[in-house]
Image (tube, rainbow, N blue to C red; front, side):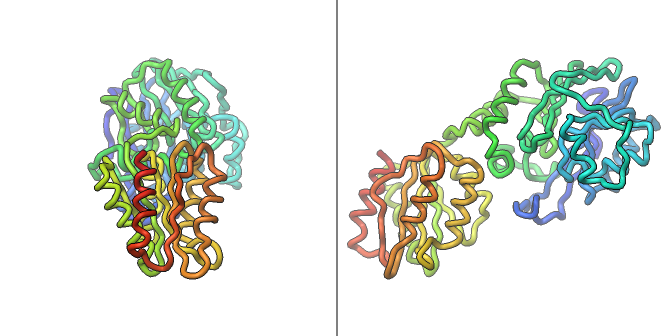
Length: 387
């Protein structure tokens, strides 16, 4: 698919609708796009390649968009294989083409392409250096840890276009129309969520520029209402609450913990909670659970005890939150244990290793199944959550 972004900048990326798991872990029911761009000027620049899975389609798009021209530069913003997969083949096909990338990216290239001699084929660039293509001038902005250390962003001064690497990316193929925020949020917190400080640094740099188009490496090109997208990224990267509400995440073995979680959800709604979202950690998408934990200001974790510890799906969830720098939230705990409850202790200890979390009291313990005698404690907890 070729699309004109401006009169001289073309989209030449491809959709991948057959991949089941992005990064071998994230469910992508609507596929993923690998975005690549081409700037046609006195000099011609390819802006990133694509995953080797979709090489044939990308080469067709590139050759058609070139219209007989030969690229002078390949700009590499990010070295992950879903974007850098065709560096070696592009070098072979265009022997006079120079690769332009950050110093760290160039240092990484032999790790991915051991049989390629990069000597004399690369141009390393530093913060705010510029490259003239003729009427277009690219300026390079370093964006380390968004979300790898070698990442950089390019800004085209002529058409006011920011090529933002994984920043502003989104799950979902471009051929599938859907709301941007939902899959962009799931993408952000699971891919970039740990690096909020780095994203904030990049946003401050971008704020000094006039931007008409944001061109990420995944997801749609953003050309309208840019304040909305930048505003969400600002909220997410500051770990601020996006939506008022309570998110309940439960891990239940035989259904007793599930019943307690559902009862608490009903109590919260009856007591006036604006929004209650709930997920089954044993069956639902873990990446969506992580997304919702960050989206809402209040989290309830409910889990069974298991082998003197906590039921593994809950352990996995809390481990994911720690990896992604979960912080600045209020968290309530419900544990279940038939003879020696241990889940509450383990969950509280795991949460205690995260930043600025307020544990809501009381921690509620149920024994095997929820009973009438448990309801007062559940009601007290619901009140404390909404306080």
